[in-house]
Amino acid sequence: SNNLMTGKRGLIMGLANDKSIAWGIAKALGDAGAELAFSYQGDALKKRVEPLAASLGSDIVLPCDVGDEASIDALFDSLKEKWGTLDFVVHAIGFSDKNELRGRYVDTSRANFTLSMDISVYSFTAVVQRAEKMMNKGGSCLTLTYYGAERVMPHYNVMGVAKAALEASVRYLAEDLGKDGIRVNAISAGPIKTLAASGIGDFRYIMKWNEYNSPLRRNVTIEDVGGSALYLLSDLGSGTTGEVLHVDAGYHVVGMKAVDAPDI
Ligand code: NAD
Image: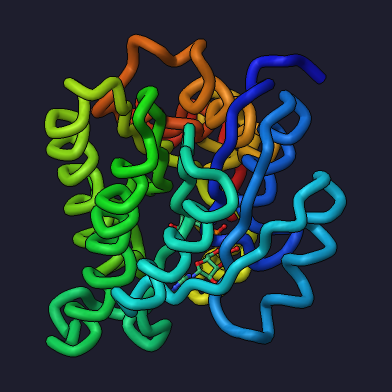
């Protein structure tokens, strides 16, 4: 453990269970001395999130459905009442109908396109909009993205389009808030077996492909993502904003299948 986050307070959104990327990030931040609050979606997750939060010394566990403006306002009103100010926020949230995370992108429905963009893209802007008002000594905002934003990946479909928009929004938010010392970044994580990922078609194959073909010849863990999140959210990242940092074992630099890659 270290003291990189001592004296800093932040909100973690998107914790579902101990496999969540949000959990890897929360652990790294807690270990570095951060004071944490958590939001969860829906009553079913409350009893999962509470003990995880407690294990990091947090008893601030609040509901928030990012599809609902009033719910986001209620979350930030509660935080403001408890803390007054905020130093960082982590947005580890995405959603799309899993029936459209297989097959062809061209078959995406208007309803699921709109829903995916709303929950996976706009919600980050909506959250940053509220967080900004509590970050009067500067701050750091982080979201999670995937390489499917940059290149076509099997089955990622409308989520790839949504992540491309999310990455663009990171750049626009960075420009808007930079003057106030607020940094906005994304981590582009390699594939990790989480609840959300289980909805993606052939996910096991994608994991194997990344393991065999990434420069590090392995998949990344939520702890790998946690370490990079700590960098971006702490003062170590003070000169970095508008960035999409790849935490993918180097997969994004590769141009073709590795010569030593076994058949899958
Ligand atoms: P996860 O299932 O653990 O987390 C997804 C979270 O999104 C859940 O906590 C869920 O409750 C929350 N969520 C969905 N809709 C919501 C809503 N309307 N309001 C509030 N919360 C809502 O899965 P994860 O893989 O840890 O996902 C976290 C982020 O990481 C997502 O943005 C995902 O796209 C991204 N990501 C995941 C991978 C991967 O391979 N797992 C790779 C790159 C990026």
